[in-house]
Image (tube, rainbow, N blue to C red; front, side):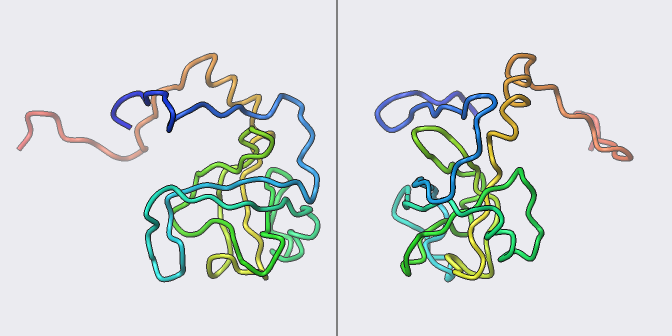
Length: 156
């Protein structure tokens, strides 16, 4: 973003999970939102889309993903045959449960809503202490990539 967001009816703040909050229980109802594709055919939505999903136990989800998930991840499914959830270009969007951002869209299966591979999110509660530390100290300036040089402003 080039400027600060202006809070209003369409733009608001979302709370983080409390420090030390327990992970969400399997079956918890949440909402995922995004401006990403609404199908595997790269069809864009007319506006912000959202869907209700349910948290899936990490043990069950991990078996679908052949053990590749970590405790800092969480999974959802639509709970029915509608195959609702996120799709390509939704990455980084929020998973909102009980008015708090409990997850950030990470990855999914071969196609949108694939019932064999549940949707996977970064579990925000695993990083709350780090987030507040960065907020308190301020975000450091990124370091240059080693071995790269940048031309000076006047170079041609």
